[in-house]
Image (cartoon, rainbow, N blue to C red):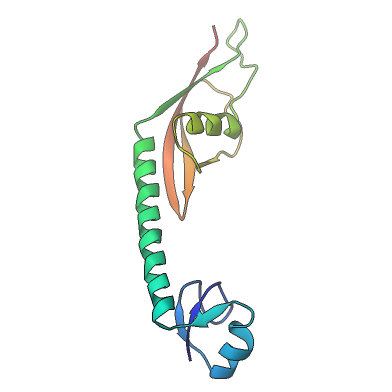
Length: 142
């Protein structure tokens, strides 16, 4: 029996794959547990609609990552008389700036807070394997 998987199923396939499985496995396990549905015309149309939505979503994420290249994020760090730094920029601070500039759903990948002056390239994850780079410039607070 051909089924459309509604969720990832170990040793069978990933979500929205169409797989041939035994009738008993489909009727007694996959379909009752809502892991799959019979691959009829209605379900195949749902699959094609999902694939279109997924490709559009992926293109949108790539466009946002490309737009991010042109953006500059400026932050000011508290410094002492001898330019020693007393504050830092955390991932949450960068994420707030991303939200202010319209980059919703972006996650900042930052190993440790920024504690130095100058320009930094920060990785930003838009999901579905789409990564972008944000230019962060830190300056001394006057």
